Image (tube, rainbow, N blue to C red; front, side):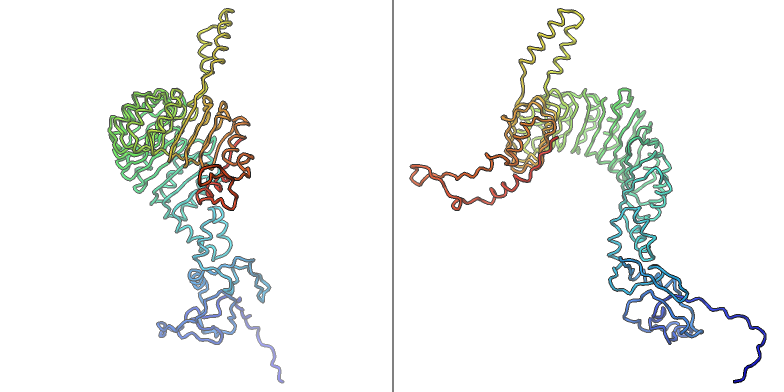
Length: 589
């Protein structure tokens, strides 16, 4: 063999690094090895051969076997098409592939063989159940997961987001930018909030329909009335707005033709409140429990009647509610009202009830908790709403008695809920405080008279009894009714009974004929009373589970004989009742 002398050093040939791709051609779908794509030249660009029946896969490529004239495959474009079409995702451990250079690639670089893979629709449904933080972590798994997460963000319609003090506006903006089609948003703020958050939401979500801001403890809401009103005016699709911690509102003017539900809580010292919402159906205003609150409730109620004629549900909680404010509301003649809740107004009396029953004739819920109405007011309510009222709440009303509650149960056949907690109370503390004001303590004669009076009051305690027989009543709340010592209930549909802190209820004067009872709350009650409740609703004692043979009279009526168990046949209703008896839960300390 002839050896030629070495010539001048030729330039070193640069070896292109190996590239990964697919076993099949990205243009025609045929196997790549020994294949020249007919669509490589410009003349045959419009020629499309039928693709292979196998699903495209991400795999290693062997570029050295391909002719140099064939163009390099567009890996990024093909990978995107493969993921978009099939979204091959492996839920097991990542696959490790070793190439000739000794480099290792995880599942994002190497591919899968298609066995055990999930379609994109299933993967999207799985990822949709994750929290936003978990979704942001899932993006880093692989390209297939990243595309599925993008589909989840794009298709999201409702988002509930907890904003920690470390996240702030940057985290919220990055999340909202991913889901521009969002229509319902709930933010739970663990740090102070201002108008910057409103601006971020308004810019990121143009089609927002429902927006809710919940505040954690010791968090300040610095949004003012002007900023909130500007946000509502800009969001033309907004129909529901709920904001907590509105202590810095000051002046509030809300004008919107799309807003149908508005909830504002912790209001304080509102100088002026104007609502121009012709389609507003539900309004909830919760004021702080401070005596120095200077909000003019009379003017506010009068404005509501003029500018919001379609109101159906009204809830106002304020210790400054009075008869004058109720009269201002009823003067607007809101005939469409279905729910009226005026809470904590100790200056609301039977005069306000007269105005309510004369204006609102179709109420389904009436809440006058904390008012000063009497049994006469309850009778007026029962005479006007016998065919519509289904929920009556009269908690913290010290002037009503068990007679008024019994009258309501008889006259209102559609009732499903009665709440008269802390209304039927023991008046010993009130009498003692009244005696202290009448009989002074600084004189010895006054001390003797006070002790004599208090002893006679203790010896003449008068408790009340409550007897209710109702066919549709489902929930009964008697929490804190220390003035009750007798309770008889015959309510076949009752499933929730609250007897918390009924300290004077006698165990032998309790009768519960409620086969569908599921929850009985008896915290703060006597042990004997709890035992009597468990005996009646759970059949725990021998009197309820005794194995006796029932008696049956003979055909001629001469005597009674015992019937064996195999003769006794229980109806289906009785069997269901026995099963339900064991499903009741007694909650106590």
